[in-house]
Length: 324
Image (cartoon, rainbow, N blue to C red; front, side, top):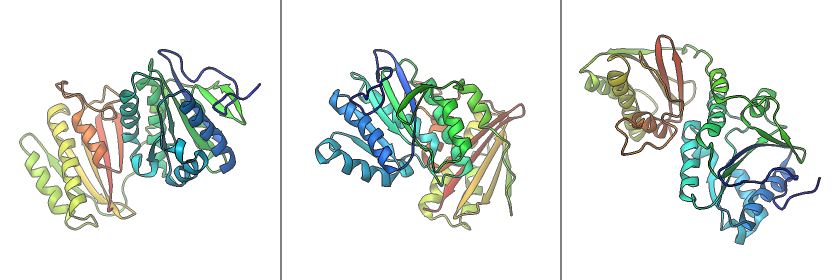
């Protein structure tokens, strides 16, 4: 098999009209990373296709240097450690880029999981990887997702095989024999949430008490490590979640607040609601939509991590916010 112009082994075309390709790249070391990812980007530029690279910051610098100033200037760059700190924000950002380039096939490098991610972040990033296949179905785009095969746990690499129809390993294009439907992967990303350690503040709310919810959060947040700006973000995020409870979650709910192990806080909202659309909050809401998931969208934009669990009893949202 001979190399293609994008540095990958001969396989299916990067895109054909009306198709979507989602590939996991297992790389071992910086040299292979630059060869494979850099080759993918060069192939996009040679084909005059728009390309977005969203990877952890140190990788951005290495790729820019590898491509050279002229080629790097044609690429849209994003530091995934900031851009995708909350994995629930990534999908909309990728879709926004593809929408802006709708007249041409888009190529995207997205690295949502890297060594050092917490287990909760990895679960939500894995959910994101599964939902890419739903959100991009039928679109003219290729998404390449690098995975550090030497630095990531075996379980993470196994999940990558379940969320990507095509794998690139050792320079070979392979069909994943364990590729799974998004619903099956997302179900596995929903283990029970652990109970918090330490003191927990609790507030039960009912119709007409949205203002009381806000006042409760404002008072509680004054005693945390959050600065004024982040306290405001917390109040707004909890307010949106509680408003959803009152409108769509049975008209009442339970709010719990606690300090996290690091420098941050967690807010949990439980109600009798349902989440019928797994992409809710992960797609930019339409202004024309009467519902549109605007509340959950805003929550994802404000928080550093959003964990969602659906059960027969209702819906639980855990909102994590750091003191940055």
